[in-house]
Amino acid sequence: MLKAKCHSLQAEMLLWRTGYRADPLKFDGSIKSLLTIYETHSRSTYRKLRPGSLRPYQAIDY
Image (cartoon, rainbow, N blue to C red):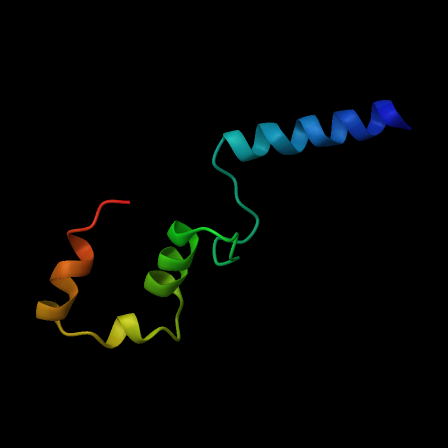
């Protein structure tokens, strides 16, 4: 049973390292995650900002 769990965790880690994320809009507790959700969520007010207001947001490199 322990060996099976180790294999499962190893497979999960390898998927994670390749960039696969199950849900990109899932909050993981980090500021980067919070900002990513704010910028990409379909109901976010970020999408309603005018181009001049977007400029300061886009200048930030996480």
